[in-house]
Image (tube, rainbow, N blue to C red; front, side, top):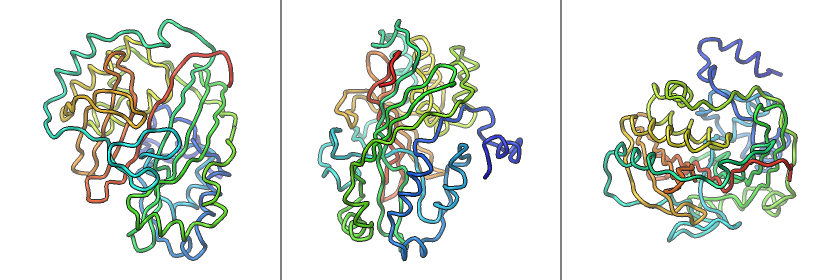
Amino acid sequence: MFGEERTRTLLGPADPARHSTIAPPRLSAHDLIVRAEAIAEPVAHSRQARPTRRLVLTAGTLAVAVGAAAIAQTFGPSSPDTSGIASPPGADPGVVLVPVAYGSAARDAGGPLRALAGSLVDAEYDNRTGRYMYHHRKTWGDPVMTSPDGRHRVAFADEIKEWQTADGATGKQVTVQVEPQYPDQESRDYWQRTLKPTAAASATPAPDSIPLPPMDLAPLPSGRAQLDELLKVRFGGGAVSKQVGMVYGQYVVPRQTRAEILRVLADVPGFLWRGQVSDRAGRKGVAITFDDREHTQQSLLIFDPNTGELLAYEQITLSPVRMNAYQVILDTAWTDRLN
């Protein structure tokens, strides 16, 4: 089995993540196998492999993910579910994936982002300490699977609680798989017939608690040059959006750094200000978007209008089937307890 270091060595200068901190896998190898086995055998054997946008796989998941790539395409996170998160207006919970709504009017995001950066107040975790960085997230669309004819899709969803020391030496992750989501009723009907009955019946299995493997987690920089490098500014708004989602999903970001991240975003060409929106947890925020026409994708970031914390990150396909990749950050804190 390939390990992370051997993979990085083989890729060498071509490794796009060689200067990045790679987060631990959200799913264990066992979970990936269970999800692969949830598909009836004829579907699994007839599914043609599709290229994935995830270029580097973390240690411990590479071999399993290669085997599962024939039936699953990983997008990242994605859309509403029936377990406590409010669906956007007009959405049918458990059926249709609906992007977060925002008005059609848009303007350059630079000015509003700089104004927001200059008005931030403390978050609940500011000026507090603890041994562990704690995050409570929900993700949708990890993975998204498509039927052999390309007409029917299903997006898996997870609720994740994670504790990790600031240096990455130790930690714990608790994952609960929640109700799958569908882009339309036809896809729902197809996959509920196709998924094995045992998988369809256990939409909310027991939590999967695993220790996090040690990782060399560098301190979060606060200076502009270091943040530009961390957020991949030279690669444009799509890459920056993903990196912002990674940073807020892994670190407890202090107010000064939150403000500087907003200023970084303000200087990246192409971000549009979308004004006030509601995220999938029903929280009020302000949103910016970036359209990556080359890769037919749109990124959307939602920030708390007072503290500047990232509430949610969405990536959707600019096509008639706007299958979402989505993450909601429900809680961030410092704590001394693993519970």
